[in-house]
Image (cartoon, rainbow, N blue to C red; front, side):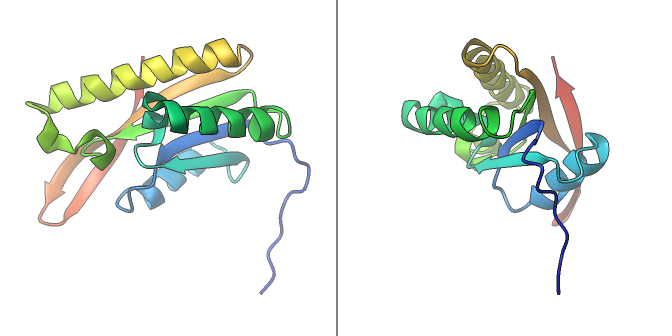
Amino acid sequence: MQYSFDNSKKVPVAVVHCLDYRFVEQTNEFVRKELNLKGRYTPYTFPGGPRVYTDGMTRNVFLHALREISVSHHKITRAVFIAHRDCGAWGGSAAFSSLEEERAAQENDMRAAKKTLNREFPDVEVDLYYLEIVSMTGDEGRVEFQPVK
C-alpha cells in the first residue's frame, strides 16, 4: 500500500507530549482536529512530555533537537506542550495530596518550560494544554484538553 506525503520541509509546529499509551491516540486526534495541524507538525514524545525540561540532560538533548531540526530545518513558529493527569513521570496522581496539587505542579513545570523556550527561541509562540480525565467508568475514561494560562 502506498501513502502520500508532503515534502515541503516547512513544518510550522512542534508538539511535545507524553508517551503514555492511554492518551496517544486522543492526543494525536486533538492535534489534528482541534489544533487543525493534520500532519503538519513535528511530534516530540517523551515520558512526561513537557517534563523533559525539568531534567538537565534531557532538556539539553531536547533543546538541541528543537534547535537543529524544528527551528533551523522545519522553521517552526509555534510549540505546543501537553501534560496529563496521572502521569507516571511525575509519580502519578498518587504522588500528590490532591488532584489540584498535581495539576498545579504540572502547570508550573510547563510554564517554566515555556519561559526557557521563549528565552532560547523568542520567535516561537508556545501554547500549553492539560489533558484532564473528566470521567472514569471501570477501565474506560473520557478526557478533555484544557488550555493552560
